[in-house]
Image (cartoon, rainbow, N blue to C red):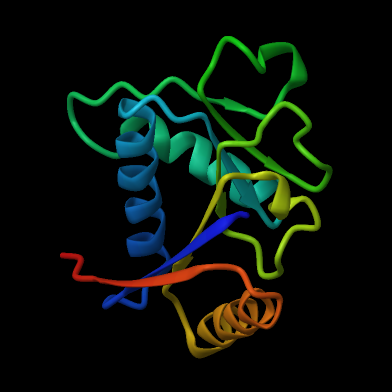
Length: 144
């Protein structure tokens, strides 16, 4: 069964959320995990793509905007919309809703930060998973 981790950031900015996603992605990739980062759309995917190249001096995190042609050659993909058929390890969900394909993944990471509307959407996702019996863990993260 899919394990779901909620990371609750003490900072409420979208920038803090994106920075944490980069750090979490880097750690997972270094541990040998394949990561799929799900976003709400092309604009958010593009911003994250750019940030993953420059989020920390000296880091190298090979990634791509989701492409089936690159599925086996890169361990980190960013996408939105359709089911990423070639992934089943770690899903980092930045979308406002739970993606329909989440249960195929071994783990899901939900990163909660932002304005009250964004936090409320996170609470609703938490309820969704809990009501369906998924194992949940919450982690309070101090950033900055």
